[in-house]
Amino acid sequence: MKVDVARLYALGWKVAGKVPGSLLRGAFNVVADLTWLRRTGGVVQLEKNLRRARPDLDDRSLRRLTRAGMRSYMRYFGEAFTLTTMSREVVEARVRAVNLQNIVPHTENGQAVILALGHVGNWDLAGAWATRAVAPVTTVAERLEPEELFQEFVAFRESIGLTIFPLTGSGDVFRGLVRACRNGPGLIPLLADRDLTATGVEADLFGLRARFAAGPAALAVSTGAPLVTTVVYYERLTGARRKAAKSPWGTVIDFMSPIEVPAGIPRADQVRAVTQAWVDQLGIGIRAHPQDWHMLQKVFVEDLDPERYAAMLASAT
Image 1 (tube, rainbow, N blue to C red):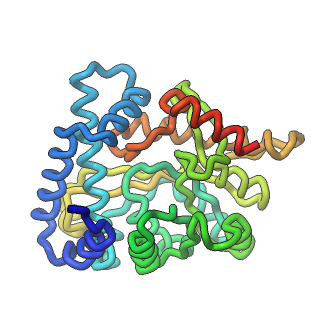
Image 2 (image 1 turned 180 degrees about the vertical axis):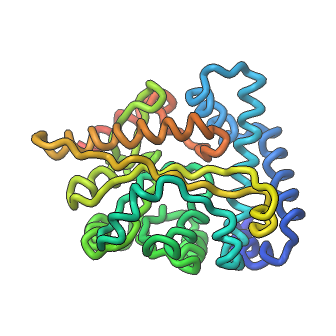
Image 3 (image 1 turned 120 degrees about the vertical axis):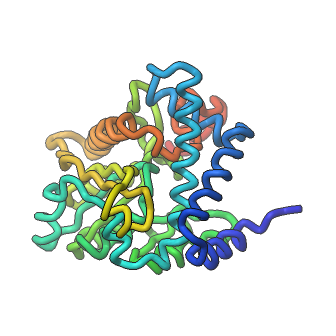
C-alpha cells in the first residue's frame, strides 16, 4: 500500500501539538532507532558522511554517532510538527543566539544579511525566532514531490512568519533574493550544503571535494550584502530554562564572522572563494556538533555516480 506522504505530514502538523511533549519525543526516538536499526539507504549515507566529519572514530563509535544523528533528525521533525502551536515565550526559551554582534549592526542599519546554513539542527525553529527577534526572514524552499507535500511545507513556514521563494517553478528566484537584499533590513538564510540545481560550486569539506549551492556566495558578490555562516545545533537544557522551554532540548544559533569577498578577481572566482570560506566555517561547526548534521544525501563527489556526475557537469557548461 502506497503511503500518502503529504497527508501524513498534514496530519502531523494537525495532531502533534496536542500530544504531550514527553510522549511525542519518545515516539520520535522510537522511529529514529528503528530506522537506524534497519540501516536504510539514508542511514548508510549519513554514516558515510559522518565518517568524513569524524575520521578519528572507530566503527562502534561511528554507529553510536549515527544513532544520535537519527535521533537529532527525528527531533527536528517532532519540533517542526509542533512549531505552529508553540508560543512566542516557548520559542524564546528554547533558542539561544551566539555572536549576534556579527549581524545586528547590519540589520539595525537597514541592511539585509545573507546567512549560509547547512542542514544542521532545527533551522525552522531558528527562523521562527529570528524573524521576531532580529529581522524579517526570507528564504528558499526546495520543491518537494508530490506538490501537495511542498505546499504543506510552504504553508508551515509561512505560518511561522517566513517569506518563501520556491527553488523552481516561480520565476527568477535569484532576482527575488536580490530584491530582498536591497529592500532590507532582513535575514536571508539559505540551506546550501548540497547542490540541488546541478549548477553548484565544488569546495573542500573535511579535505574532500563536495558540491554546494552557489546561492549564498553569488548573492553576496552581486549585492554586497554581508554573508555570515550560521550553525544551528542542539543543547541540553536544565532548570528554569528547561521548564520554560517545555523541553529538555534547546537550540543554539551561532552567527560566525562575516565572509570577505576578495576584490580584483573575476566574479566566478569570487563565488568559488567565498563558497570555500563559508564551507570552511561550516565544517568547523559540523565537527563540533556532528550528531546534528542531518545529511542523509550524497554531497561528496566520490559518492556520486561517475557517469551521472560527468553528464551533470557537461549539461552545466
